[in-house]
Image 1 (cartoon, rainbow, N blue to C red):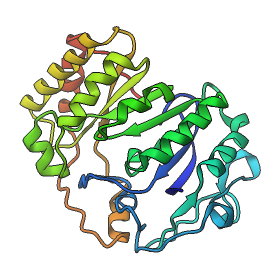
Image 2 (cartoon, rainbow, N blue to C red; image 1 turned 180 degrees about the horizontal axis):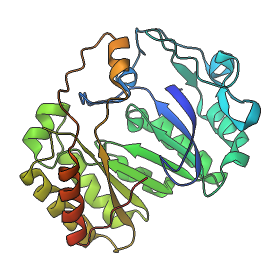
Image 3 (cartoon, rainbow, N blue to C red; image 1 turned 180 degrees about the vertical axis):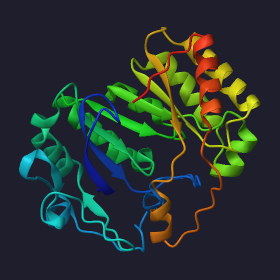
Length: 285
């Protein structure tokens, strides 16, 4: 069984084209700026309420006008009541069939993206599902924090890989996220060398990774990744701090601890300039 807490369509934000994005439950990090804190715990969502199995509440319906929602909510949007969100459970076969039913909506190179939480925590089931989707010719992508030691096993099953680089300094990374970045950096090097289409995303948060030394570390490591790539398969993107998830922390009963995380325009400009001066390819989705 795969466990997820949210799904829906977006265009061009989590991979190319129109995509079904499925948020799998559970994360091994505790980033204080996370916009999906309801997805952190492996077995509960918001206040701890478990949701329905796919056959009773997790199945995607096409809403009037081409939108998508959950049958649990009666049509056009996900039923996520404040303070009491649901978890959904579905087998690999059920999700593969449901995703295939949405294939007509995967226009402009679209497909399915798995994110979280951290999608690779449900590694075996995710691997089986990706393999089933590849057999059907469906474009696959994941967004990952890069910590799983077996992440490279998924490379042949992924058309598009999005991987976070939050902080290059290991001590700072460990102290803020609760997890070492050693495996992340190793997997990033492997991805740049082996995967045909990788986007490294760097969430910039004032006070965590936006200083001059942080900028130099990002540029140096990005340069290392480019040197190990074929020159065409790797791109980078900055994700700037926002507070869209703040209300969710409150709904989860968790304190929101980020203070003054917004990145000034001049800092954004310095990061962009440093990357471009070093011929490191940047995109903006």
